[in-house]
Image 1: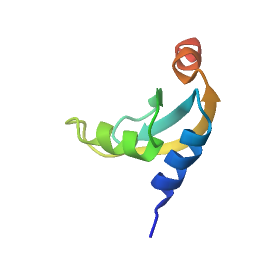
Image 2: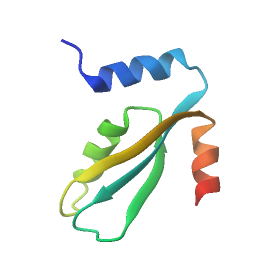
Image 3: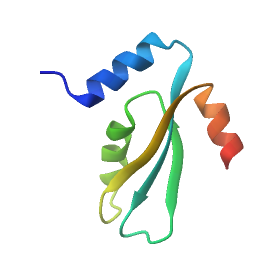
Amino acid sequence: MRNSEDSLTDILEASKGCGFVYVMNNDYLDGVVKIGYTNRSPETRAKELSSTGVPGKFVVQFFAIVKEAEKLERKIH
């Protein structure tokens, strides 16, 4: 059985030249949001960030598939 992360990866692969821009939060980082980009599933990225020694887990609040995700993420900052 395929999960939603696999489906997102399939969508991204079909959208050549695109990536995900995401917004995440972590209950232990009150008032802070993480804005970033990835070429993999945002859920996969949240799991990676949650294993960096930061307390709590990152939760994806929003994501979009966009062209030139890295460039857009830099503009957002």
